[in-house]
Amino acid sequence: MKDKVPSKITGFFISVIGTGVILRFLSVIIDRVFFFNSEFTLKDYEDLGLVIFIISIFIGILWLYRIKNISD
Image 1 (tube, rainbow, N blue to C red):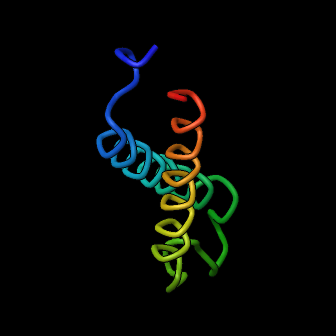
Image 2: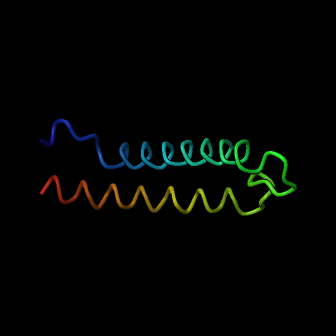
């Protein structure tokens, strides 16, 4: 099982960057579908990048925790 699991650092960065890209893509889709004619948009929300960053780091830490349990 250890040979199929990427290294901890590589997996952490893949999970953080992948989560960030997916969340940013979902925010664009939500803007276009739900807030099409509204004055409020998610991309104008100042802290959206920070929220996406924090969620991505949290997912990366969860990935590290899960890998720790798998490799034991």
